Length: 260
Image (spheres, helix red, strand yellow):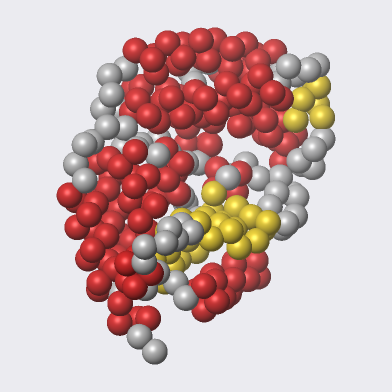
């Protein structure tokens, strides 16, 4: 509870010092996935809006606030304009933020935004994103005889998200536990549960022996989702008008908040 209040206080500080209105703030990463280690940091992501005059300037404005990065906190946020553009692109990470089970702040404005933006979810873009994340993790971190178990999660979770999308054709859950029903093999599930128990009691950097069933599953699924993501047709939504209307409505309706 102490950490949560500290995060909320930091969000208020960001609003005051940056002269922005934060519409939405959540936990991302291992804590949102429900698989944090004792020394996991807090990955806080937020969406903010600036005063209308800032969007009328000719000079390009910074659309990211990078607030804090240390051993405890990783805090950064996206401007509303950037956020809406990323919704149009079907950005899978943004949809994860929007469905995080740990919410530090939300607003009626954000609830309205996401209600209208859900249909911009793209199965192809999400599959390609999750496959790429799993593939790079596997190649970079899971080739030695001993590995960081957190990297198994960084490979398994996106592959399970791919499987969820393949069979449900919708946005996958954020929590790792909620993706495990995508696996039907009891022995594999048992090995994953063993791995999670070891990770939960270990430091992030502890090395442990490779787990053969998990290793094989990752290899097989990488082959499958590389092929599937390439074969899928582009299903991105072309419409910009909805996003333009949202942007104008939010910026103009909140303008009174910035009047001194």
